[in-house]
Length: 386
Image 1 (cartoon, rainbow, N blue to C red):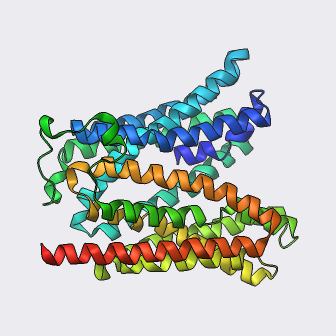
Image 2: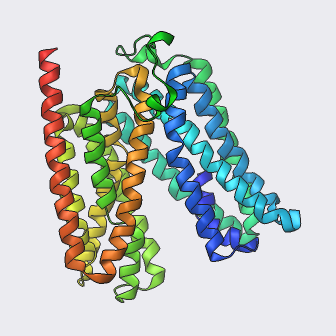
């Protein structure tokens, strides 16, 4: 609720502080880079120190504090823009700090209900917050001001921190849920910091899987391009585009829960549907028939929901507990890199040749599908041999 509520108005907020479009793009782009790239550092830090709870709480705490502090920016005069940009970057730093540790903790406690279901429930609740935060901000802004909207977000932030601290007190060691959680490596067994950050020692299965999953992430056309297509082609009025996005978010939440449950029952083979869906998205969502376009948007929401939930559950099955935070950091960095390349490439191809865009996406998904099948077969053989 807190960070999605704030992110929904970062553009108007920075503009209100005097930022140009270039500055808005620079700050928000740098923020996303911070949130992804720095996970390479905080993943190994969590595994080396074992302070998963501390890093998780610190990361969420930065978000809970920095977002409401944005309400002070207009009172700081000429320093307001610099202060606002700093708070946004610190909020994104909080995401980098907490994400590897949070995923490692979730992978441990979700064993009790099934990792697919656990990550699916997490994603579904995440989407509830993604809906509620912007709606809360919109309501407060309509009644008062943008800055009051930021201040009000202190309430869900405070509730989240109380919940986290309560959970830490009740379950100080989530490893009790996970029999695979072993003793951390001794200092003599540790690699150098840079080697840890880039995933030295992680299995070939992990990297094959990370590349395959990242190919699906990078090739999934962004909703920004889909929304652009809907408006410039005159398929829908601008006011209707957010409603289509909201419907896709609902599909995303349902997909995370449904596929997570199936994953626990059937194994990772259910994820083979993702490259198929990703390949269908541009062919449908960037067409000229509204019905087909809406079907493409629903396919987009389904693929997005699985990518941000069940796909992460597989990482915990491929990597031993003492290195999971590191693995999640590396996984996110690879995903982020290919997402940037894919976003730029899709926009460039859309302006030049829609058939070429459809073809390129299809080829990348054939590669992703082959890598997934190979990884799942190797992993299954290794488990049988063990």
